Image (tube, rainbow over all chains, first blue to last red; front, side, top):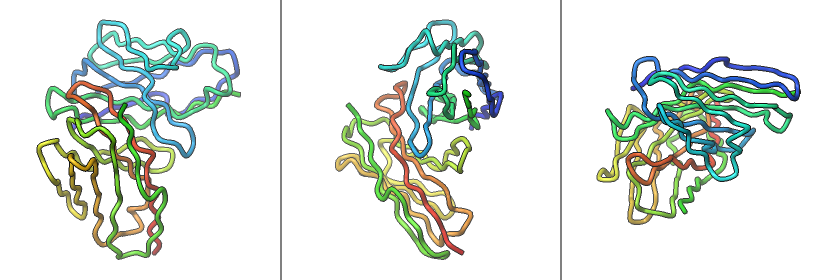
Length: 117
Length: 112
């Protein structure tokens, strides 16, 4: 399966600042990556689909100007939370779609815990 | 719109018991179904992937079945161990390149 890393694993920031989270596919060239958000004791909610070389596709209710996604290469996608507020505090997880090898099997990064003070 | 539910929401069993986790989905037109494990504060670990044409998959003490027509999947864990304690999530995509919809998860606690 694919190996996916995320950086940082956790971050604490002040309200109003911007935070960038990286998602890397270490052993697989991923044309598609997904970004999820998970609040405590809840399941994963898809935020957006990141496509290499094109604009991300955002789910309904997710502000594209607040959650900027850049997928500039086949191994890296970044999620920037702009002007973060305490309600943005959450666990952010990315995944790689392995469709080219094993039929849309998803492999997940370890997640990034964001705390906005 | 695909909706995925999981029963029970939480389960506590003594070590050594066999157990079954349930996953239901409303739209049977799925491409595959995947079971994941999530430890507290961690990412997801893929456990089993069942293609829509398959009826079950096995990996060690885990066995997952799929009944598309009834919109159900079960994850069977044999001889449970304390290390199995985690949240188990099922997830389905509609097509090969579609987004994946997750169930709410079942929180499992195996008591030594």
